[in-house]
Each structure stands twice: as structure tokens, then as C-alpha cells.
Length: 68
Image 1 (cartoon, rainbow, N blue to C red):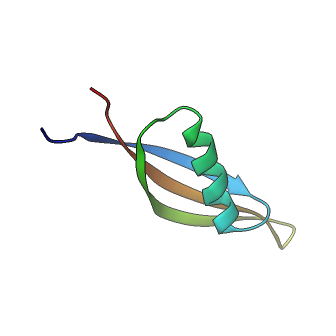
Image 2: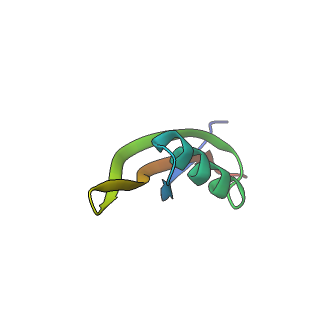
Image 3: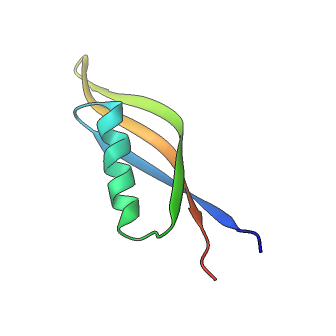
């Protein structure tokens, strides 16, 4: 029998880096989603305040397999 997956979108931020923002988003998704099989980063943005980069933000899709 085949598998069916679902995609949910997550937005996460970090003051350190894009990589850290992805990690934060993934770790949070793991708390509520089971069967995660992949992540697709859709967008990267930087929040700027007073000419300083203060937060790295990512918008990503979390792909997970639906349970029977």
C-alpha cells in the first residue's frame, strides 16, 4: 500500500542565523508532528532595526507522512 504525506507551513526566527532559525522551527514542529520526512525552506528574510540585522527568519514547509 502507498503512503500519503501532508505539508504544513512554519515560520521561525533566530537572532543568530538562518540555520538556527530552521533548527528552531524543526524542533518546535517535532513536538506536535510525527513522521516528519523532510523540510523545504521557501523563503529567508532578515528583520532590520536601526540599520542592524536583528533577526533571521525562515518560512518553511514541514513534510510528514499521515498515519493509518
